[in-house]
Image (cartoon, rainbow, N blue to C red; front, side, top):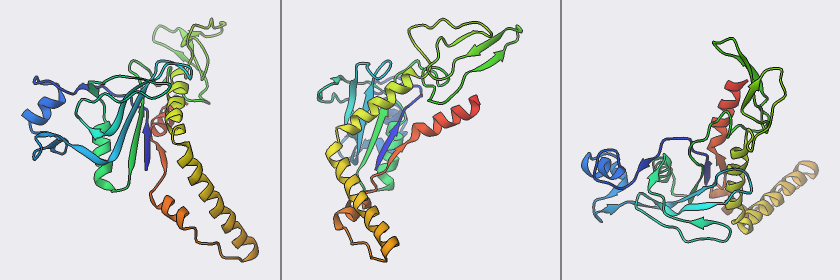
Length: 248
């Protein structure tokens, strides 16, 4: 199971003995007990949830930094660098720990959470998804502004005038975040191709069955791969669709 999401949330510090850090919440206040392994007196580590977090500022050509590539844990980690990506430790967290450990408790199948995000970005501007059109809005001062649609620039301009583009456009961060998620998935191309081939064989056989009455062969490898629940679930699409619905 693959779970991808672009996270728009306030991050919190991992380590620290003062109120406001995750360490304080877990070790002093006794919250989130699933994050702490009492027997080992250390942070818990998931056995089946892989945590991957990449970050980039801007579009598809922006530099990529890898912050997480390990089994889900709240411990400080510095992932090994990979070709095309820088690498360094991230000492803050978002909701991925709660999501990841919940998925790990739900299933014993291998799970990968794929997080791609950066702070100080707006859903209605930097992360505007493709297809969203611009619109006019009149404020309390009776001035009407045109707000940018996907790939328009700047963010807003006086209605009825010609916009003067700036060095950024609506949806640039969306483009970059989705591309960076794709780049991580591309690293798994051999397995992905194998799955696609097995699915193609099964669909082809099922089509023959429908047209000719021939029973589709039982593809053991196909069934084994599909049984691992290899589904790519982009949770961020839910939020983007909600945002697009509101904007419309």
